[in-house]
Picture 1: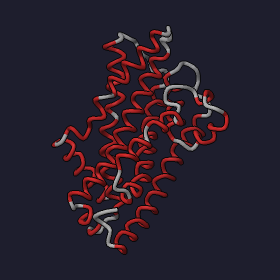
Picture 2: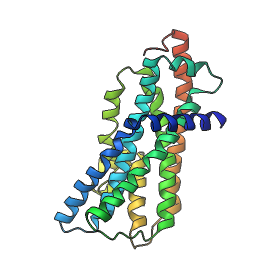
Picture 3: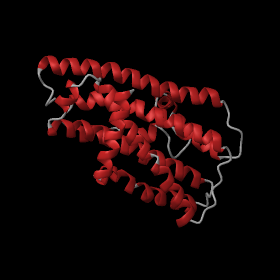
Length: 255
């Protein structure tokens, strides 16, 4: 835990000195404007909630994926990856700490989306189940951090992290149904969507904002949490395997 907290503080200091690392947050307001404009043009004022949650999730996920790839590639090219592997703490603990900082910063994406809806579009948005919405958002942050840890060993093994960063964004928006109900996906694709944490998170956030009672809340929250924790445990095990391999082969500085 000490290593995780130390890594979190270190990454927050790094982002504070290099705001460009959070550039993904600059696109979130633009996405909010686009999504909200589409909803309003279609006469769907109820779509504003979907626009806010969708843009927030997209901004948060993009920032996390980009930062996961960038922190690994930057450490490799700066020659600090070898130093991280030499410390007593495991690489997965360090990655988790740094990603926790990224995810914390990424929550600003939701604030940006809300401000766009209220200031630009003059919408009055009410969250009918604020406690459920807050809990869902918190569990979503856990799931995002856990899933990002699963991606870390992939980035350690690859020299072309940018390619994976692109591949891991847009397909996740579709499988995660961040802007539409999962029921609109083809039936054969829905089982795949069930293992993507974004699909559980996006639907829960939309339901928590609506007036109707949120159905099957414990089950859905549990599924979201289990997916995140399972991703972290798997990522931790894979990272240890990858670290042993690159140490054995002497390929720490390159894939």
